[in-house]
Figure 1: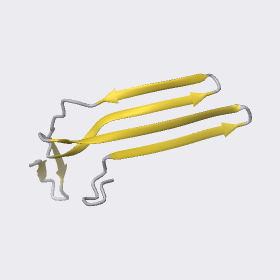
Figure 2: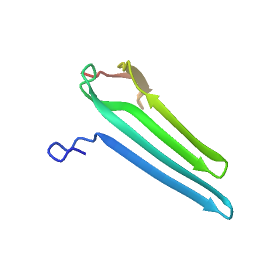
Figure 3: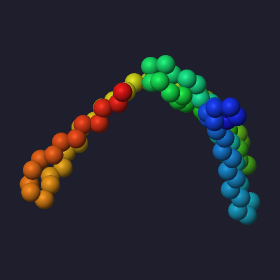
Figure 4: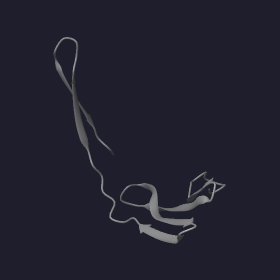
Length: 90
């Protein structure tokens, strides 16, 4: 986190499972970057490392080509009228 802005630039998660002779460990890290077309910081990359008695696996996912989507929903009031709501993102 950036101290001056409070902006989250990186998140991390570590999990460990151990029972009898079985164990599994996960380390996951997500890096964020500013995306001008979205006007906010979004995930840029996620790194995962899985470790167990069977071996280790490391993966990296990169996020690009962000797009905006809009959705329309509808509901009926108790009077039977069809009310439509449009959520528009600026």
